[in-house]
Length: 331
Ligand code: BT5
Image (cartoon, rainbow, N blue to C red; front, side, top):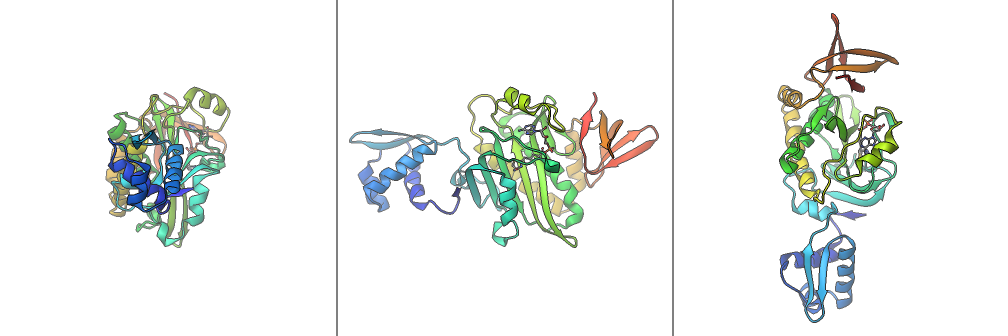
């Protein structure tokens, strides 16, 4: 595990190389300036390379940093942070069962408000309703701890707001327009490109914490992932956001920024604004949809969202109000 608050020796060397990006720095200079032994310098360089940074070395000249890593390492995020609370503290794993479980375990601690847990891959990623979330290399798998000021009456809008924040970040950074599928999926040409999971702890009507799980198929092999998921519940196709080499760091920092703004809107009870922005970007509203209620398949037309995020479906003269569930688009 790497965090945003340790690895000081490694970071000293890396920061020095970054501030001398276009020139060689000798091992001796690094050792003298940073006041660490030559052996320690060499060990740090080896470690930094293993983290995906491209460093060339030349005899008699020393080391030169050519390119940053593609990994979402904690210090890369905190260095580029646009938000003030979200992402101030980061935990990064190469492999974890589920970032969500790790986050839930530490979420009551007051120092963890705004913390982000990221993993390069997950072995037991979770979807809603105990479903599995496949999390291979190339995706962005993260959980966020929020101890909000708003109360539990606002909780149902949080996943809607989170998907809207992610939509904005993707549009701004990658110039890709995703669609929002109720309740909280992002799709690309109708296929799922990101999913959101919300865990919470509530006492009376006070929210102790929210843990927001966000899974983004950033650069994955969508056809092989799709094949392995075909028989799973609520499957309707997989999409990857990008195909070519693209770094995911700008998307993550933009998302944290957008999310922080939208959470502030919830706190100010600007629900109507969030809902109307969501509807404008939704592929669900106006569609004929099917939904499973008490094991019975019901169909109708998706009309609108209530201010708490509930989906209103009209079926003949009746209307159905859905606060949770899965829908299928029929057209
Ligand atoms: C979700 O559940 O969409 C919530 C996904 C949240 C994942 C994040 S990753 C970081 C954090 N840590 C965790 O352990 N989880 C969170 P749901 O709407 O229930 O969708 C689950 C269904 O989506 C599965 O039954 C599959 O059909 C499908 N699915 C699984 N993995 C997928 C993937 N990578 N891409 C697209 N669809 C997938």
